[in-house]
Length: 368
Image (cartoon, rainbow, N blue to C red):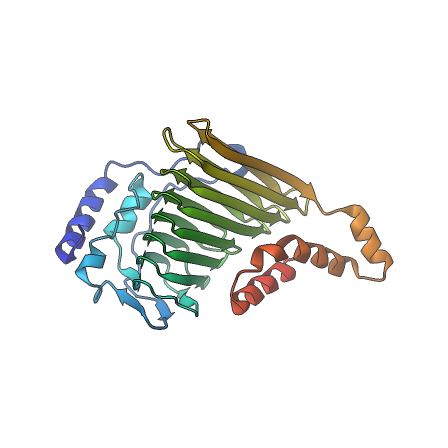
């Protein structure tokens, strides 16, 4: 358990781990991205830069005022596998803890908004959705050109019969390296929905893992990305089925323009002994230039027969016939491309709050 004294111990142990743990490495797509993480910032911001609004009955806390029983959950889902992970905990200051009380049905989204201004930031969000609660959290990320390093960890605990949606709108500056790790543990008959929009930062390395621990638990991962210029995206999403009658869905749509490059891996793991599980994943990418590159592979690891799983991946270009049809109706070529991209992404945005949907929509159309 991580109490206030435990926080000090966690930081000290993480500093020791820094000495022995390696930098993260990539087992695939080396010929596409090429970039590797091999250095750490000299100093990290000590500002608490999150601004938040929360309707009742939701409690939002920082490291200074969070109840000890919530601080005790910090780090229980995340892992320290490499120097980035250890560096994160060794230098953590900007912590936000969100507690959604038992049985609460929170109608309005809970907004967590940040604008990074220093050269390096470490941020951590811990969410506890108590039994039978229902809520949506929107994490909006922005940065000035001065920010070059952003380490971001999210830990989500969805208790039995709770429903939680966690939305990330990542719109960091192109100078920023964005290193994100997200974890969720989902209880009996509970639902966890992720939505990720990776639109900003020059280099994004995002790992999302959902653990379906309770019978009847469900998860849905929806992601969009749009890379341009020389943006690089390294995206991995994993769902572990760790109980009977669990269900997961992954759906990702992305577009790449100019010299942008992306890797995407989706993993659905159904462990031995867990029956009547269902998993599906689908990844679609549009390449808008000859120099854009994508390496996308869905993966299934199934250790028993009483399951239903599907996976698919597609890489396409804008349809020339459809573009010609629109242009023949007097639509400007750029407007025709925008219309087709809107159609490609629009269905993915349907469940978002209107203000978030409008912001993401604007970013998509301005990139064409």
